[in-house]
Image (cartoon, rainbow, N blue to C red):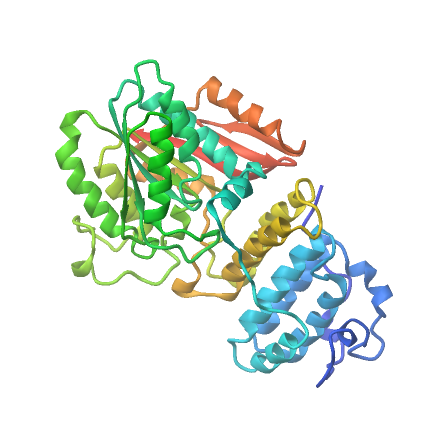
Length: 455
């Protein structure tokens, strides 16, 4: 099992500065930047995960203090011990190094360093734009998303039993990929299929995964699929974005709620790895509350994340599902954020060897998406840094503060999740924490699933 603590064996501040004005890609792995430093063969002592993490921390500190000489030295070491096509720890470290170089390109005297490094390392991340079939197959490769789909659908089916109209608001990073399975289950209800209304935020996402369809085209495919299962589906995409806390979507839902609440319509809020894109307390301050898109006026100036959850509570949903990654990537301190991300994002690199062969296109797509996340967490600040994942405990507190009450997942849901996990590598596991379910890899928390009703 991987461990990520410890200190490097050498003090890099004691190493003499160096200069390499021109180098080709091969030379950067051969030349020694300063006299007396070990050869590439002698760098093996730096090659474990805790040393690589510590070197990344030193590099981040050097970049933040505009110490181009020290940063250059550490980059040379990391280039030699962490090739982008190495083992899982090396590829993880390579992704973080690339992100640090991108960050250096924006900061003072380190711009020259970044320009030089860019000549030897491809800094661009080319994320794939998926077709619907490609994306459906892609999310099925690993429990990362399937865990949330399975738990959410089971909880939703139980909550909407007996309703003739079900309104699902799907706030998902995977373009409604869990909805066909839910429609299949709804179609087989003993009392007959209900009318299903599906509402999504209809602004194209600028974060992976990316889809090659418009929301209108996606909606048409879903309507046709539902029709093939004898389920009537109404699809609506409301132009709305995470950047303002889905304000226009909330406004539309509030209007609909006033019209349909008394008619006995079930309202389901399904949040699948999307809410962590809403700005929270460490983001830039909100504008003046007079221009606040939400109708209620806070006594202080809370984050959009807090305001969004309170607005959801005001809709009095039948059930709200919150599924997200169990990590904390919100710190404004770069080193803290780097450590948290490094100690979480080793997991997707470690798991990929169990389900995708080296050199496959899907593996390239998969790792490009991770690299995008690493770059966003490390290289960007302010509103550009949208990957602001919070831990389960923090989300639980947020939901309670918004006057939601947690509900447990039933034994049948747990059984379904375990059956799904049996289709994947042995390292995946499931544990229950209070009312919640948590997907694990080799005992480490990966993704959590929580279910909520108005308190």
